[in-house]
Length: 73
Image 1: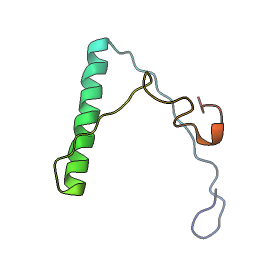
Image 2 (image 1 turned 90 degrees about the horizontal axis):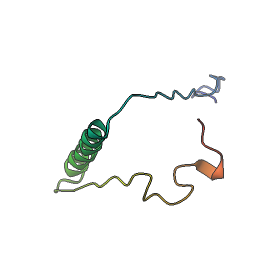
Image 3 (image 1 turned 120 degrees about the horizontal axis):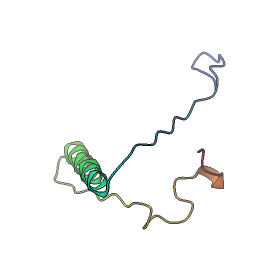
Image 4 (image 1 turned 180 degrees about the horizontal axis):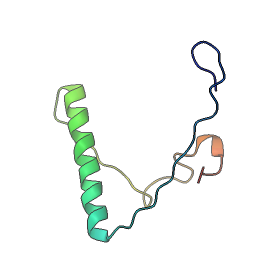
């Protein structure tokens, strides 16, 4: 990867963290993410917006994996 001046700055690193979670904390976190995205888009577009995040049960196969490469983790 090159910076603006054409110098090699290396490849980006990926950090994967695992946290202990209960169904209750996962539900709270998912609500927080949806609420935050709704607020961001409401402010960005200047009118009320509601964002819904679709999780693994509803994602199409291969969604989020660039060019069909295997997941980075």
